[in-house]
Length: 222
Length: 403
Ligand SMILES: Nc1ncnc2c1ncn2[C@@H]1O[C@H](COP(=O)(O)OP(=O)(O)OP(=O)(O)O)[C@@H](O)[C@H]1O
Ligand SMILES: [Mg+2]
Image (cartoon, rainbow over all chains, first blue to last red; front, top):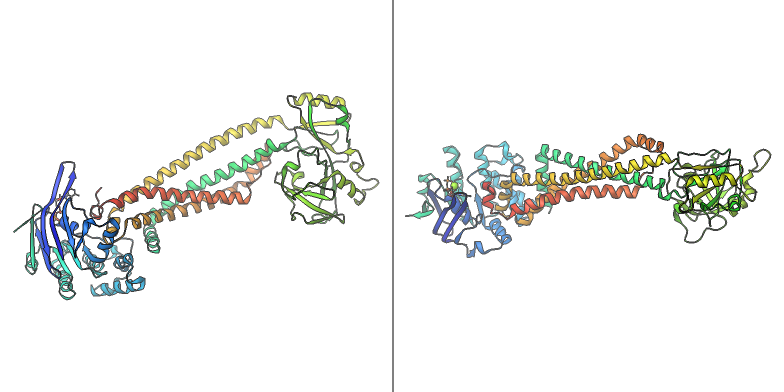
């Protein structure tokens, strides 16, 4: 379902051009769980952003379910991200001025597929499932980092994405919380069949993946 | 669109301190501009009363008549004394231009206004008058006829309706614009013929009918200087040719004050333009800072599927709401301030001989609307460019807070 061909991304900085990712070929089958591992600064987040349609690659192609992502128009790409991709960032990523329920419902509202009441019912269901049923009206600043990450996952799932990208969703959390959140993600992958690409430092977790992608210096190492 | 407005409102509502500060800044700016513009126009209009539409350069009245020399608009006051209607014409004074005779009778129980109200019935010669008819704001679509009356701005009755004066029907032909001068505001104007036709119905005071109602008598003349003639020449010529008359000119020392006021207004205008420009700059700077601060949120919205137009729309709507509310508050503030200072301002201007005339309501409303629209437009433009620039960036860059 995902095919990356010769994907590269370099940044222009004051010290010259920094190549974060270069020549990556990667295939992930539908319903697969792939783990991306590598040292800090190796280019994992950059690769995820390119796959997720958030960062335009300097070269190469990303094809998801037959759609060449980076040849879409800006609006079409927005629509694609909205409908097909769920993205969980490495850091807190909720809109601080919106309640949790609004944060989760927002992608559905933007996609206009379920209508307002349908979107909010779905959002409430997802928050419930993440154990946050009592916090629908809370604001992000009123809950813990772990809880915020769960809300971000609920938001990523609201439009039933075909591809779920999670970039170290538990990097700043304790082990027990990390375990709970990872289980949640794996359950979704197993039960719903959502393709999952997960960046993690947890090697035990990576071993449970069907494919482990090891990145060093922006390239895949065997 | 509803979603965008909601997001914008949420942003404003959850960041109260900043929103209030922004609204207050815009309110002060637009309030100053609105108040300044309204006052300037009002003062400007009032000065126009004092200058351009003044009409007469001097007034010739019987020696004992009372005159109000501080008023900018020379008007004849009612008096029992009279002059012959043809004294000036007979004298052939070269330094005079147009000459407009007027008859004024102050009456009670006329049926116009309240029962005991004193009403000035003012007769004019429509062909020679140049101080009343230029002020006609509304009139019937024909010439003034016998039986027609013109009402001062202080009186209210529909055009074309009937007005009974001492029981005699008259037709309301026209209404004057506001001048702030008493006789002009409250007067009931008509041709000499109409006034003469009324004469028989006017009750007599004691022994005689008012002398001015006799044929060939007038209360006074409003006169214009011939081109190139000076007031001094004219005054001298009139006094030597006409017995028992007095010449009244506007107070010339006042014109100096008026010129000073005009210069002051110019200064205020320049200041206002400056203030407005700095407000525009401030708002754009503020919004580019706001957009920069919110890059992360914009990136996030983009990441979850918001289109560029939606991002820009959200920021612009937010800006327009904030600056629009600021504009409304500013106008309200301005109205309040003008109310508070109305008395002292009117008093001051009256003292220097400028009858103060407020800008009329439709114009004031137009100014208020313009101030609000302008404030919102500044907000929209201030937010548009930074939002548009930010929306072009990759979502990931925005989320990471780069650029
Ligand atoms: N916007 C940028 N401008 C310049 N260099 C960048 C930019 N983003 C990333 N880089 C560089 O690209 C390289 C890869 O960064 P990336 O964030 O993808 O690493 P990572 O593997 O996700 O690291 P971590 O595990 O710490 O999250 C790093 O050397 C980083 O300095
Ligand atoms: Mg990373």
